[in-house]
Amino acid sequence: MNTQQQTQEQLERFQGFLEQDPDNSSLICQIAQLQLQTGELDSAKELLTNALKRQPDDTGMQFNLSHVLLAEGKYAEAIDLLSLLNEQMDNSAIKYNLGYALLHTEQYEEAQKQFATINEVEDSPVDTSYWLGRSYYYLGDTANAEKYLSQHVEKNPDNADSLGTLAMLNMDKENLQQAQKLAESALAINSNNTEALVTMGNVYLDKQDDDLAYNYFSKASELHPSSGRAWSGLGLTQMMKLDLNSAIIDLKKATHYMPQHLGTWHALAWALLVSDDVDAAKETLEKCLDIDRNFGETHGGLAVIDIVQGHRESAKDKIKRALKLDKMSFSANFAQSLLLQESNPEQARKIIENIMSTQISGSMTLKDTLQKQIRKQKNTKH
Image (cartoon, rainbow, N blue to C red; front, side, top):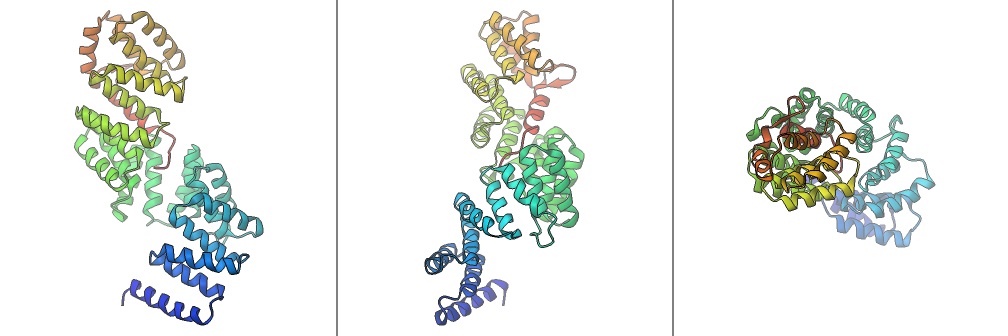
């Protein structure tokens, strides 16, 4: 008899006991837990909800209801319930569930506080240090993120999730060799780990192996269709393969899931510009100004568009602004090079056709710049 059959038999046996003792809260909680294991979320919720009508102050049943709400993805409702329980008692499991719910509603500072209070507690859930590290990662505190993720990996070397997240963190820090090592370890345990797949895609994109990069990003986007990082990497790979139509489609998906990530918006703008859709490229960069008016690459990109459209004086103003914000701005230096060549709009268009390999500021190319912009991002919800 397999585990699933044993669980089902145990569930049926307990349900028989409950018929004899319908207000036994301990038995109700056990049945709800078994129903969660068998995927019977509606049944578990109905059981607990009805029981709480009769025993509204039963904290055990309230806590089990929070498990159902988390499984349903109803994080706001779970937060309301768990916050009340957290006020009533000091319990590691309650704080863990509350931190988990807060993290999934992007309340990262509050999530971090909950996980931090129980990380060193003896009875804290085994994955507390993972979620604490992940909270720090979302907050952009890479030092603490690495500390606690590494702590979790040390204690749980076969956990693909912590290995995958740590791999992505190293990728963001440009430690690609270590990122690859961690990602390969994660994939050896779970070949469908999304963060490890995205990391490997970036590793091979950096190695200029667009085919392998495509395979990793494509698998990641299929497994996790809401992963902005997977779509962003896939779009950049398509762009480097000069499949611009596919690149634009994928990058638009990425901006949908990561609407605040400037690097992806810039990749989309360049793909549109190289595709000769100048108006759409300009509109895309103007959206970047709404996100952050102090990002030099945006002003530099708009300067390039001004040159393509023949607005040289306006381009000079934008170049000046871009270089004031970032003297190493790729787009500003590229725009400046076009001006120095005294290119007319038609010549500028021809240059842009070969922009993928154009070197500006030493050995940097557009491909290098976009890879760095896309990698160096504050991690979002996948």
